[in-house]
Image (cartoon, rainbow, N blue to C red; front, side, top):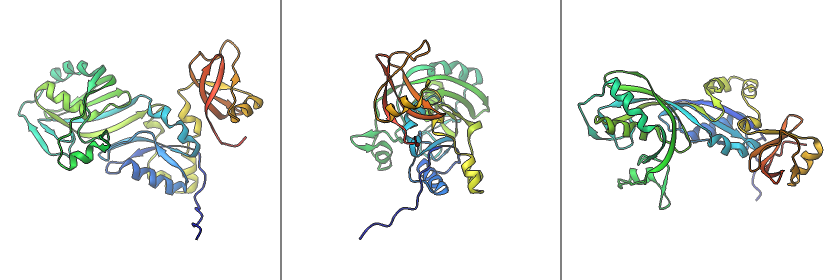
Length: 302
């Protein structure tokens, strides 16, 4: 017996979702796929259910550009509650340490430089990192003691925005793999008062910021509204150099063949670039011996 044919359609582009608190990233993608009746979609970086903010979601051919967005710098605004450390480093976890000490504003500010630059950070026990093939959060939920080795992460800036006696709100700009919950945990330990995250919002992922984001209510009004909020495939390539090519060169790239790059403004050797023809992306790849060698080609219609 043959399987029923899917009535889902091909959709290509990006939606920059302002994910609400309480929803998983997977649920958010599934809901967007239903809105657009799309065959293929995926997000560019998990956002915890307790967090809100920027969740870039790629559809169709845009999924080929996800690594470039995922590897981009991220920005967060988060609030730390002093006096309590939890096993998950956020408000969902069980209390494991407490303290009556509270840091002054000066003490917090003076501690922040310890976290700027490339540092070694131990990810939270409740994380998606795999240990012997198992997700760390699954092991932690089963009551196992989870020890994850510290790993290098890059934090470009960490600033105090506001504070009360019991909390501090900070903003961080950081690279891939950085855990904000771990920053809160380790900051509390350095200050001797313990701490955990009680609010977390992602304000930027690569080229996408809060001004680019939309909420579900705006997408579910009408089909026209949903289409209006869809960004083009090349939005995920905006941090790469673009090489404008003619149709003959585009045809070569679509066949998987290299093209020669000429002129003073030709990209440097080893650089990753994308090629566009008639305003549409054709392929991306690396520059080798003065040629663009395609690694992925877009099927957007010639």
